[in-house]
Image 1 (spheres, rainbow, N blue to C red):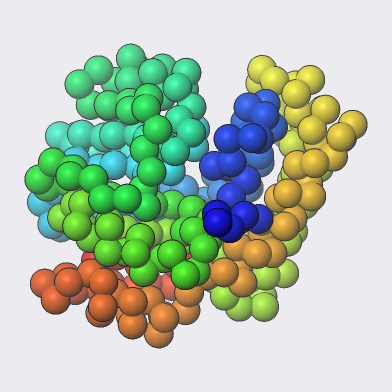
Image 2: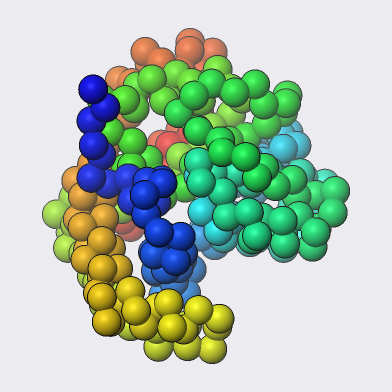
Amino acid sequence: MKTFNVYQFNADPRLPTPLRQTLLETFEVCNEVLASFYVEVSNEVLAFARSRGLKNIVELGAGHAPLTRLLVDNPESHGLNFVICDLIPAVEQYQELELKYPGRVTALTESVDFSTTRAWPPSTLLVLCAAIHHVPTQKRPALVHALSLSADSVMVFAPVRKTWLSVLLAMAIIFPAIALPILLWKKPGRLRRVLWCWLVPVIPLIALWDGFGGSLRQWNEREWREVLAREAGEQREPFLKHWGNRQLVAW
């Protein structure tokens, strides 16, 4: 029997597309407009890829691909190739990005489940950003194993940590979620945002629940090291970093 995952909003096929779009926009506003998380992640990714001589960067669970947009626009990314994919791909946004950067961005418009093994090309870095908490705890060791078998290097980023301060700060997402129609008023989709944020205020509730659970469901450094020691392979050397409420795990 399949267990229902109450944190898998983005990847639940039953979620209406307009609602999913609005939810992704909420996270993007928090991580890019109101905070510098995506910028910090893009800098970490490029530095890591350069240090290891990697040529291909795959954004798993990409959503609307905000991270790849920053990466490909960065002059430091010259010579690197990018792939964007998701379990429920944002086909229109992916194809737009692919057309804008021909030969540099590849959009996978089919469903890509990052929890299963996939043979990516040599010299590939897999990046999973702000998504690890959607994977149930009991399934994460298998995810680490699958990612390790799939590519040369892996980076997992989280905008929150398993601390009470992080929980409180993450729950503050309800405020930008309520203000989203105003914050993005000049962009297409105003009526959609007004509907889901104000008239039927589902987005603030989902965002609040995601922020609360996203912090509590993170692994601490000890848990990560224990799982990586078992599942990543002896040839992999883990790298863990914390700054503010952010977390980076690479191997």
